[in-house]
Structure formats: structure tokens, C-alpha cells
Length: 473
Image (cartoon, rainbow, N blue to C red; front, side, top):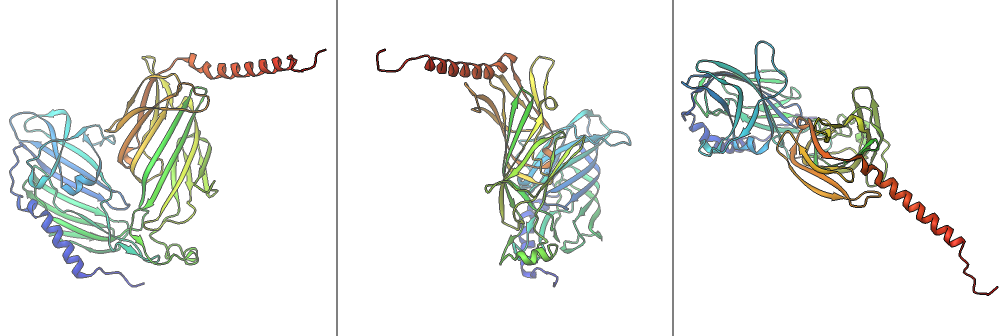
């Protein structure tokens, strides 16, 4: 197959529009920050090996002012802010780096930034004294940022995408020294912007070192490369969690999946795909892996037609893996809907707090690995008779209460509904739902069944002992 080369005219127009979009930021490179902080060194590593973009920043910050600094600002371009899914920060102490991102990060309301750059505030654990330095690690995740080009490909073509960024770190502070590394899935890079100095080694591009960059400096770059990794996007995911204090936790998850890569054009040939799937379907995917909790049981996987047998469950003491295959491979623009259900032991996920409340401790996010979720809804159906429900989610999310009726329910179950947009694997951290529940309510359903059977048997006995004949004896 001939190597694809994008038309120079299209690349020229794309580059020109990109430069014009960010030219105000470049022109304001001499904008002077009012802060007394500066960045001594900055290392930026961009991971483009999947459909989700992950950026790792390592910053060394110095306080040149006369007062202590309790926060540090991060700047994002309008495009990055639009596609930002999550941002986390951590301080680095000594030679051993902390793996947990413990620093609080929040958006600011500052609007007088060059070209509308979005600023986020990182709260430091200990105020940075005058003349002291601090090392900070930042991870932020971007979704829907890779642009397929061409936008439509045939079954046998590989998928090429654009990535746009700045070789120079966009920051509200003066940056003394910095460098940037970009890692791609393969070494098939069609083109990339060269900024002096630029080096390439296999799947990695290196920009820098750059020295003494003023605040809000910007140097736009475009990288055009091959990325055939699954562009799996869950358009909508609804997770229903039903808590029963009789000993089980019932999970049911409704998925609406799509391939968000370059759209498929032409005719799909099943024969060619089965003969050489790595060539005649390189941009497609047909398998997904779900990470489920240990001790899972009663697992099923089905769609509108019925049960799908092409699934494999592997369990051990630490985790369970469910490998599923949709009924057909997914190419760009194709969609699939399915349901996954399973049961979990209650004692592994429902506990009692020191205050006497019960609480559910469950992982947020999507069990499918390396997928993004456009809209996630989690419905926690509490046992009937529960009171004072309260959700504790470690990030911003919308939640409200509603009523749900299940088998043998009389007054309905209080249901905590949590909704969040733009969810990525980094959101898969525990959340809690607290509620008050008296064991007396566990007797409601058995007593109702006993009463119903008693009334039925009483009616049968009364019927058998009733003389309904019309003839006198």
C-alpha cells in the first residue's frame, strides 16, 4: 500500500488557521505576570499512544517575592480547556516521588488573561517561603483532541490523526528552562512542525531545550501521525447499583458504544476482514476488556438480540477481567449497544461508619479500560426504608434523589443519582453513598409474603368450608 501523504495545500491552510488562532498568544509573549513566582525548569511529556491524550508536567517553582505563596497557577489554551477531562497535581519531596496526586486543583475566575487562557489554581500543602523552591507534578487528560485526517478512510487504510499543541509551555510565569517530549503509538509520523531545536528518535519527538521564555509564550506545532488504537467512546453509560442487605449487590450497566475515529467509507468485506484483520481492518476494534471487582459472580453480557456468548471471564483473588466481543467489529462511525450485569458480595462494598451510618464504597467511572464516557449516570438504589442519603464524590458531579420501585416494594427505594460528563479512566476512584438503615425494615418483605400466603390459605379454607349449593337438604 502506498504511503499516504496529505495534500500540501490542505496542510498549509490548516497550519495557517492554527497560527492565526494562536497568534495573539504569541504576540503577547512579553506579557508580564504580576506574580512573584517563576519556573526554574519545566518538563512536559505528552502521551499520544491512545485516543485519550495524557500530559505529564514536572515543574520546579521558585518564590522571588517578599511574602509566602500558597498557590500556583497553571495555564491552558482555550482549546485545551474545552477538552480537559481531569487535572491532578502532587508535590515532590526528596528523591522519592509521590505517586498519589494529593494537591487541590480548582479553576479560577480570572478573565483578563491573554486571548482567554484558562487558569487553574494549585493549592500548596505548605506555603512557599521567600527564596524557597518546590517541585510539582501535574497530570491532565484531554479527550476528543485528536482530529482524524483524512476524516474518512476505507477498510484497508490506516488511521491518521492531527495533534496540535505548543512546543513552549504556556504559563503565566517566566520559565527559565524547559523541554517537551511527545510519544506516538508507532514511528509512522507523516509530518511534524520543526522548532529549533527539534529531535526525533523512533516514536518520540523532543522539543527544546528552551531558555528564558516570558509569561504566556506560545509556539504552535502540528503532528500528523498514525494511530490505529481503538477510539472507543461510550456515548452514554448508565450504571444501576441495587443494594440488598440480605447479602448481595446487583450491578447492571447499559452501554452505548461508538467508534469515534475516522469514518468508514465504502463497502465492508467480512471475507477480507477475516482473512487479514490486521491489514483489512487496522483501524477497527472487536474486543473490549472490563476490569471487574474480585469475587464477582452471575455475570451476563447481552444486547437487543439476546445473550452474546463471545465473552470470557477470568477471576482471581485481586480482580476479575471480562473480555467481550460485540457481534461485529466496529469501524469509524459505527455503534453498538449492550448490557453487562453481575452480582457482588455485600460485605465487600457496604460498611458501617463510626457514626452508625451504612455506606457504599464503590469505584466511580467505567469498567472498560482505556475508554472515555461522554455521559455517565450512576443510580444507587438503597434498601427500602433508608433515610438521610448522602453522596461523597471526590470531584465535581451533579446528583439528586428519586424513587425507584423493585420487586415487592411498597413505598419505593430512595435512589441516589450521580451524573458526570466527560469521564476518563483517571476517574475510576472510590466514591461513597451514606445512608441510615434499620434492620427492622428487612422484615417488611418477609412479613408481606407471610401475610399474603396466610390470606390466600385462609381464603382457600373458607372456600372449602362454604356450602354454595342451591338445593335444600
